[in-house]
Length: 372
Image 1 (tube, rainbow, N blue to C red):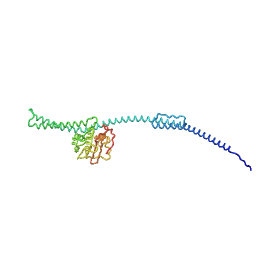
Image 2 (cartoon, rainbow, N blue to C red; image 1 turned 45 degrees about the horizontal axis):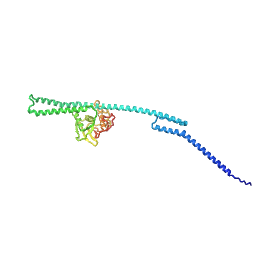
Image 3 (cartoon, rainbow, N blue to C red; image 1 turned 30 degrees about the vertical axis):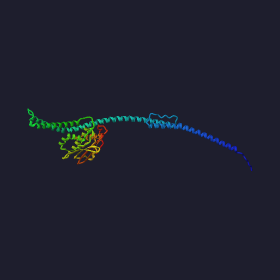
């Protein structure tokens, strides 16, 4: 047996120092490698990606003139940057084309709107002239009656007038006839004044007006035509209506269209009746025009306010009366509704607001919503 004893303290110390040196070297190498990786990552990855993010933000804010400049990046990121720039350029071109198209579209829409407004004015005036033509015959008869009376009275007065003046016993009679001449002449003046006010093509102007008075004036224009057509007119006009802001001439055109349509709807009946009434309602004032005609079929109720839609025989109408009337009521901020029962008749109700409507006084183009 051999028993040896060695002192390994120096070896252990050397091994410990060696381990410490290895750990230090390893730590330094790891630190250097980490710094290199961080530098490499920030320079060749983080910065290009940050620029890509800035580019996307610029595009999201529609800043399409700012090119994407990436330097010292990998081939893949360079390719991505080039693709991004191509996308930006194409997007800028597309946006420019869209803006140009939008500007052209807006100019065309404005031009078309002006054309439609001009066409609407012509249609409104044409409809008024058509209604005026229907009135001319009845107004001629209406004027002829008082003129004939004035002629007869003037001849009678001429006979009563002697060389020495008026016989004393016939002075009262002379005054009576002279008063009748004055009244009949005033009647002719009112008829002509109403007719001129209706036919005059003036700029629409709104002012407080009495709806009952407008209806009464319109009835005076059509009453003779109604009598010639054997149409009985039943009027119930309220006397205490509040004044509503409107263009009286345009509202008169609406009333006239509704009255003439109601009269034509009763042609198939022997007891032709048209009822017209005015009343105060919560929103303002209301006009109701009813007839006992054939009524409107349900499939046509949604079309009656469409331009050029008509169920009248050829040559009797072009389907503009109700379309123009709807446009006028719409501009005044009112509503027009229709209820009809086939075989019993039709009722139109027009409501005008008490407060002025902010829209223009010009009727809009005939793009009319359907009501009923």
